[in-house]
Length: 245
Image 1 (cartoon, rainbow, N blue to C red):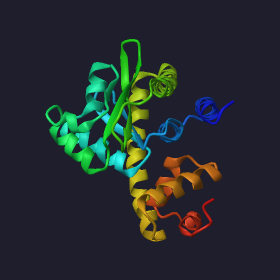
Image 2: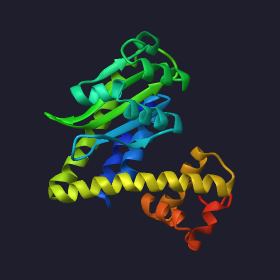
Image 3: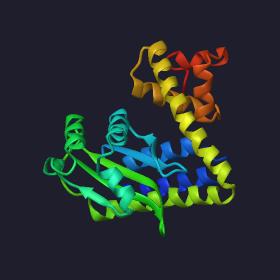
Image 4: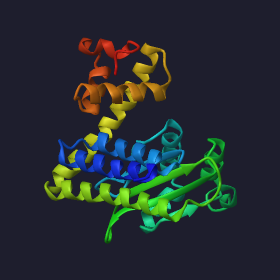
């Protein structure tokens, strides 16, 4: 098995294992974005998920730049990722400089962040669209069709996992789970800032430290985030270099 094929297989196996284990929505979606970036060779990945009223929310991103750009799209209600969600169809923009009329504010923001192209894929099953998986590259040009197929397959795995989880809960519990996921993401954002300040590291390194610490100690990411926000003394070693692995 070649290197890329092995990486793709490993990604699918890891995602499947996460689904059958104790399901942590925030951690699962973060893992999806990170593995997409690694296996597809893109520069950043973002994931938007709809709540029970159909409004999109940022649930995961593989980098700070992608996170800020996704939030910009949501705030200004403009961009390829939103269009992909509303149409339920893939949307590729291999050269964002050609899209200044279509999405003027988004294009300026994306180019300013260093991205030259974006490829948006729907998270859908039949007629139901749950969100979108968005691939960002710093170089203009189309993605290889095989890579796009792999990306869509990864998005489909996540969609099936979310729908399976939804099928096992009532509508109220689903809404509560998603709201909890949104609240958890906000707690993670707060925790990133706290760790970055206390450990004197970048926000990106702070998130990686949180993720590694949670995995190594079998914590859920959102539980660790709440512990950081509430200044639990038991996690003091989180802020010390070399003690979070």
